[in-house]
Amino acid sequence: MKIIPRRSVLYVPGVNSKALKKAEQLACDGLIFDLEDAIAPESKKIARKIILEAISDSRYGYREIVVRLNPFDTEWGREELPVFARSNADALLFPKIESIGQVEEILFHLDAAGGSHMPIWLMVETPRAVLDIDRIASISDRIACLVMGTSDLVNELRGRHVETRQNISYSLQRTILVARSNRIGILDGVHLDFKDQDSFRIICESARDMGFDGKTLIHPLQVDAANEVFGVSPQDFEQAQQLLSVWKKAQALGKGVAVVDGRLVENLHIEEAKRIVEMQRLLESR
Image (cartoon, rainbow, N blue to C red; front, side, top):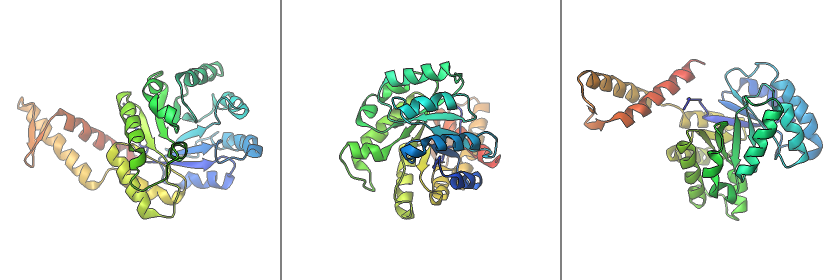
């Protein structure tokens, strides 16, 4: 799987020109220009124009640019898809996905509109989506990333937002398993209390330990912590380099294993070390 840094991916309301301008200077890895939840019905058409203009050039540099459309079964979604099919967006994000049929319909209309090159991201935000995510995610190699919609998911489960997130751990872990088995990216949902940095960091660390690539964000204040937690620490980078060096020497001697600091090192550890080193290289190249 191609490594794309997605430590921090910030939602930006498509109608907020000031926020779109500010995003040019933020240190996040990606931006999701939102036409769905953050936009009132009477503002959706103007938001569409603002986003199209914003992504018409390369003002956002290395940042991955994704546009979240409205559900395709709405009038707004049907109008938006052909507009952004051939845009400069790096991908289109589709909400409220619950079935293979939805994805097939989206891809059909996307191709018909000249967007056969366009990757798609899918939101996982309902019980039905979680239960059927293995079939949904494997339907097309155009699916590049899964995005947890934890706010909607907790609401539909009639649950509550708790710091441990034990109440949705099955949903999160199941979706991660599917993402990894299909070799596609996966992002954790948003943390609504953006002023509570301590709680945000705890949840980021939990998501990182589960296996998420990064976190979707609702405020620029959350960018630095997400980058740090989901990034490469100096210790991780140094250890990865050490593993690769020792492994190279072991292979030169015809050995299939190596030992570092009293621990057995096998091929699986080397693959992860290579990922860490490549991630650091990509981040430094910016």
